[in-house]
Structures are given as C-alpha cells and as structure tokens.
Amino acid sequence: MSLKNRISPEDRRKSLKNLLKEKDFIRAIEAHNGLSAIIANDIKEKVRNEIIEFDAIWESSLTDSATKGYPDAEIIGPESRYETIRQILHSSHKPLIVDGDTGGEATNFEYFVKNLEDFGVSMVIIEDKKFPKRNSLEAGAIQIQEDPDIFSIKIKRGKSVLLSQDFMIAARIESLISGAGIEDALFRARKYLMAGADAIMIHSKDSKPNDIFKFAEEYNKLSSELGFRKPLICVPTTYNTITEDQLKEHGFNIVIYANHLLRSCHKAMKETASLILRSQRCFEAEPMCSSVNTIFKDVGFLEVKEKDMKYSKGKTRVIIPAAGKEPIFKIPKSMIKINGKPILQRQIETLNSCGIYNITVVRGFKKELIDIPGVKYIDNEYYEDYGLLYSLFRAESEMEGGFIYINSDILFDRHIINSLLESKKDIVLVVDNSYAYHKHEIDKRLDLVMTLNKPSDQRRLLYSRDNEVIRIGKNIDKSMADYEYIGIAYFSEYGIDIVKKIFHDCSSNNRGCFHAVSIEKATFNDFIQEIIDRGFKVHNLEIHKGWIEIHNKKDLELAEKLI
Image 1 (cartoon, rainbow, N blue to C red):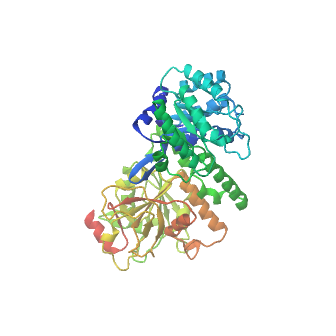
Image 2 (cartoon, helix red, strand yellow):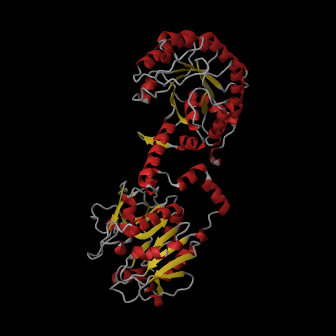
Image 3 (cartoon, rainbow, N blue to C red):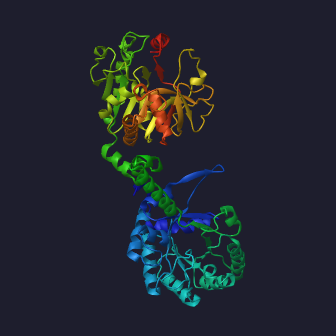
C-alpha cells in the first residue's frame, strides 16, 4: 500500500457520480488485491495524443474467489470480500465498483450495502439470479433467474438503508445469459429502474455484440418512455473485438474489463513456474519477472526507505577499474596530471563534492604509482592477460547495495553524478547525444550506443532518462548510432544481482564471453551487450556536456586548456 493514494471515503464515494456527470464514457478494470489495485490506479498510456487511464476499479467476485482458490459460486463470505475491498481501497484513490453477486437474502443485502457505503465504495452491481449463483461464463451451467418482483424488492430495501445520495445500486440483467432473450431483459430493466436502480448492466457471453447493441437501442427508447435515463453498463469479455468508440456510439456509459489482470497474471505464473522446472533454476525466468525494486517502488517501500534514510549519498559505492596499460602513456592513465593534478584525484574530488566517499580503485600496471589517499585499493596482478571486465570483478565484494562504475581516464562534472543518483532504473549508462557534432580523430574508436527510441535532433538542455539501450560497441556504424557511451554507469542492488549471475554463469560454463574472444579479454561493452541479449533492460541517462575522455595526448592538451 502506498500512502500517495489516500482519499477520504466521502470523496471517493461521490467520485463515480461526478465522473458520470463530467464524461460520457467511463472505463473500469478489475483488481483482486492491493498490488493489482496499484497497477489499475497508476497505469497510463498515450493514445492519439491523449493520456488515458482507467477511471474506476472493479472488484470482481470471480477474481476474488479465484485468488483464494475457490470457484465463483458465492462461496466466499462477506468478511473475506470486505478484506479484499479494503486492500483495493487502501491502494488506490479511484472509485470502486463492487460485484455483489446476487446480493444474497434481502436483509443480508441491506447490511452489505451499509458496509460498502461506509467504506467509500461508489457502486455495487447485483445480478438477477437465484442464490447461490453460477458464473455466467461457465459453459453448461444452469442459470436460474430470480423473480423480477422479488429482485425489485431487494433493490428497494438496499436503497432504503443508504445515508447518502452518492452510493449507487446497479441491476445486472442475466436474460441473455439464461436464454430468456431481449424482451425479457427490457421487461426486467423497466421494473428495476422503477424500483430505484441507479444503473443497468446488460450481460452476454456471446462472441458477437448483436444482442447487446439491440438491447442498448431498445434501452434508449425505454428511457425516453420513462422520462429519465440511468447509465448503461457492459462487460465485453467475450465480444472483445468491439472498441470503446463503438460502445459509446451505442449508448453505453461504463465498460468494465472484468477479469483481465487476474487472467494475465495466472498465465504468467504458470509459464514462469514451468520455465523454472525446465531450467532447474530461476535465472532464465528473470526477464519474465518485474524486478523486486519495481515492486518495492509500486507498493511504497521505497517511500519508507527514503523517509528512513533520507537517501544518504555517502553510502553510494564507486568502483574505478584502473589496472590497464596504455602504449601511449608510460604511467597509469589515472595518474596522468592535468594542470598538476592526477585524473584520479580530480575524480575523487568530484565524487566527494556529491557526498560520495566509498570509492574503490582496481590497480594493476605500475600499481605503486596509484597511491592517492581516501580510497580503497584492490590489485589485479594479471592485468596483462585479463581485460577490464576481470578487473571490475576483482572488486565484486564492493558492489553490494548498488554502485557507480567509472572509467579511470575521464573527467566529469558533478551534475552527471547527481543526476545518475536520482535514477530509478536498475542498470543505467551515461551517454552523450552530441558526439555526432564533433570531428573525431580517425584512430579514435568510440563506444557507440543504439537505443530503442531515437533521440531528438534538437540538442537538449536537460537530462533524459526514458530510453532503452539495444546495442553498444566500438563496431557500430557512426551513421546508425544514437549516442556515445562516456564510461560511467550505475547498477542498483537488483542490477548487481543480474550482472553477478551473468558473469559467473559465463565463467563456470566456459562459454567464452559473449561477443569477445574469451571471458578473460571481455570488455565492459561486451558485458553490457550480453546483459541486453539475455533480455534484461539497460537504460540510459542522456547528457550533452560536462565530461572529457583522455584517450591520447591531444585530449590531454585539450583538457589542460579547458580546466
């Protein structure tokens, strides 16, 4: 449950009626617990240049029963239903429509309505079948409708106990399900409306909407005859090729997507469980799963963490692999002085200015020269035979909890680090969108990046965080590339779990390493591409200034002019 979705019962209760006054058409989706309610509440999509979302949430008896391992036959008692309803209400701020089944005996229905009104529920929908009902979509089930006069009395008794005008009781007509036909459905609609029903839901399990549309047409005529019109509701589970625009054209006011979140997670759970059995481990199932961190974020755990810790930047770890030998320079690159101060010293000072003091440097070539105080040193004695990836994993013990990876030959602005710390993604590369505007030396091979979404041709003034890397390497054609990777990356706690498992899987299975000749010679780029190829997401933080790489002596001269 996230505290961001708080709303008073009174305000929530009236919100559905207010929406019906403001909008011609409302969409609701099923939720069966707190987590699914958070998803239903928060999900948004851009469609035809408009941001759309679900207006309300449907608490379904089918999905509530199924999540508890029971058939949809009014077996689950009211207290169990109340607990699910409370979970949904605590996890969302949108109006809630409750599936009331048959409503039970009239006295029981009065108490049910009273409690739902107190909770802040906006509407209950009861179906005109005899207790105990059978699910309307169940093939071959016997569907017995209640006497319409008895059902009308139940509606009247429910309305009589209400304290406010905001709570609605809707009548669900099962005539098309039972085979009684449209005329019976219209006859019942008239009786239920006269008894005080606030809305009518017409249900069908036909794959074609012909009867539904015919009923809607006749319902409009009935409304004119009665001198008032109450909202018309449909549940297109079986006639699911019909669009919302078509439903609106025929006069429907509310559409309910009644069981799709449960059905989709049921399929995903079976496929995930099957994959774990086939693989005899759970690593292959990871791309099918949300990260633990994503779930933490959705349910509000990160809010708790931020309040507890106030995000202590001092605990952020940094690893700088600096073991390699460059033929151009006679000393480690990290110790090259720019205006009298080594690159590593400048890196440490920038990180300290961001509140970061937990810094580990992996040494190798002429390690005795790398002795700047204030950092932890780990040595790679095999720097001549092993590549950068091996150097990075020499510091595996320093990765716990999340870390920032930084190449030893770059200078960078503190704003890049601060923006990286604000990222909510698990694996993030810092990339430069301005490389295409530069004239590079012919012998300077860049770490180029291609992304899922192409960057704007406008040079941006702000950092962008919403893109996904699909390819990285020095062999990407410059005309195809979108960015240059600058040599800084971030790995969350979950991101670290991914990279460790991939590294050790490749090492132990002697696969060689992905796109490299061997795992011993693998580069950081090789490793990132392997992560992507295995189905895990790598995001980017886009910049256009604030860094320089010391690749050769010309870069060194330029850096000395700039600093």
